[in-house]
Length: 225
Image 1: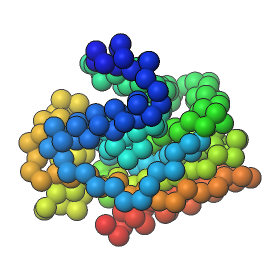
Image 2: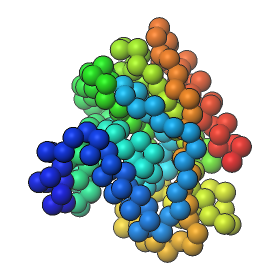
Image 3: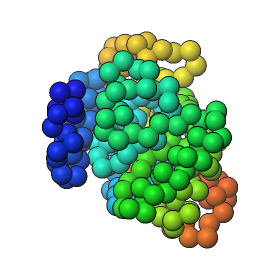
């Protein structure tokens, strides 16, 4: 927190990325998770989309693409310490139940992409159990389509020696953050795999058709796991 408050703003983009990657890998290590990434994030003006399983998704994706700024639900702002840290490193918060706020975020993401920034979103809108993706919402994809920025899918899978999709990593239903943290810390042999797929062009794309296509590609990775 001290580093973020006093040193982070003065660092160059590459310095911030190096530290974000180191912090993210450290978070996964402290939580007892192994980490593996396949493929390479494109970065630079790309919308990175991923399936959503756990609060651990953010450090896992930051370990693979540390320059990404996340779009997250405004509820995260109420999380002790984590909400402040997320806001301080550039997270964009959205109140999904307010349509006007969604439009504000779409415009903000489009501007960031046009300026060469990388933005990461969870287009399912909430966490799922892992093996099966929830419907991909097309709204935030419009930000990339509007400025013809590429979209790159990434697929996260938490697994253990006994489970292809580890239940300890699930953050669904009435599970609280503290309960989820305890389950993760108590788990044995938990690992997260990030599969980064090729980026796709968005010029003249229909957002709903593109959302369906991306979901199909990402689900295929989970089915093959």
